[in-house]
Length: 164
Image (tube, rainbow, N blue to C red; front, side, top):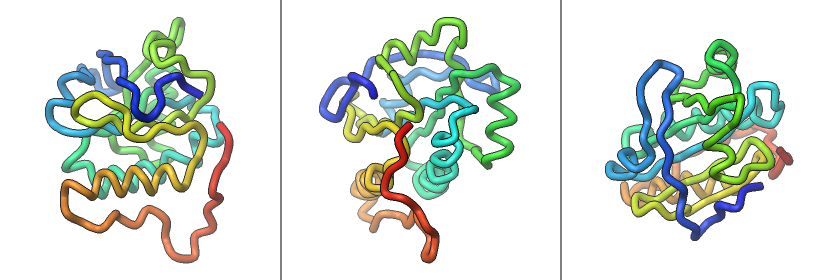
């Protein structure tokens, strides 16, 4: 869980990415919404969730910023990205003190947030939440005047929820 729920202001943060690039939430929000997903590479629910986040990124990465916030080191995070096909930016929370995870008062991963350009959280959930991912797709599709992208494929067996 996190204390940063839908309707709350998202704490701003800055951190470095896996590729060495600097990321500022405040700067990213000036350009549009941000999908932020906190994770740990050994978390099986994170491993299950991130390919679906990648599908969201493929559909909406042109109009929203995406970032995965890793609680692991750079090498392990890169291996995670390679294994699970994650191409959106991954940021490195300092694994000795987790300053950004603590800023968000996280107790479980994955924790996924959709943050609106004004800084308010529109969607917040912990674990794998099928309805939460569909809600993010719907929110990102609205300003584009599009139907929400299909995140779950026909015939794909996807549970409604998996706790993190």
